[in-house]
Image 1 (cartoon, rainbow, N blue to C red):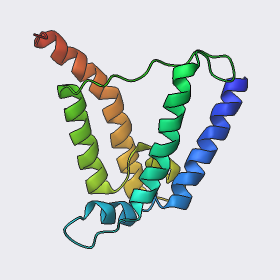
Image 2: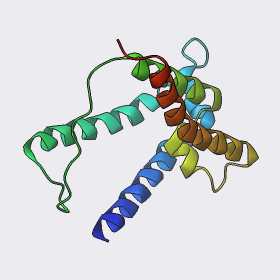
Image 3: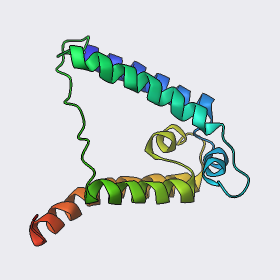
Image 4: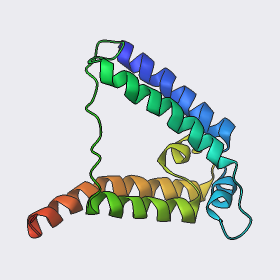
Length: 145
């Protein structure tokens, strides 16, 4: 139960941070991506504000085996750059550039986003369900070298 309470509080802070930082404003995100047009560099501060605490968290993670609630910590992510990572990054970037939202801000915007946002979230959730199934089929059809 404590884990759920902590997750709820952390999710609330995350959603509030997305809203306050402007990450739920699609025009701000698309302005960040418009490097050759009307570029808006303010999102760099949001990204830096996310990367710095995460870097500190990974440094702390090196010294700990369990979380503060006693749950085991997940292993460090892989640093390998493979075709799955590149393809996933490209797909994420295309979606982010076209719509101006990524999964977190899209969920945070559901209460006021309108019909277009509902279509985006439905497509995003469909992709999250279909992608692992498709990946498994592709892995069976084309064995790794």
